[in-house]
Length: 138
Image (tube, rainbow, N blue to C red):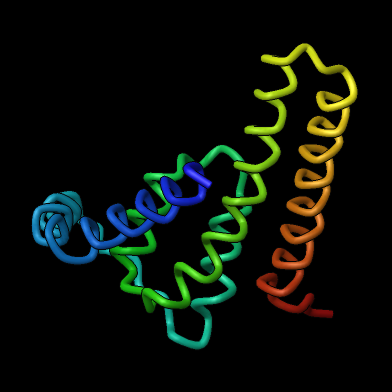
């Protein structure tokens, strides 16, 4: 329960920091380097939020800042982001409890949960990659 609350707090604070309070300094920094803040069309928000959330290796705070800078709608951002990150959190918390209790069965269940999340992420990424890839020209 605490992990779920911490996720919501982290995602909310990171989003609003990037969208409101840090937007000007970040945009100035980007402009000085010939870059601009990301722009995501409203019709593609769901796709991009999900794609960023299931991309392994991108730190959570970077995801939060990028989506805040892109000014995706907050309700959509949170309703997609929270369940994806919660799945990871549940699996890792379960694994930590298994190690703490030296419970082999709980550990196996947690590892299986992590494997299931990893497979789900792989399948979602594959689907999104196909959806984003332009059709092949004959």
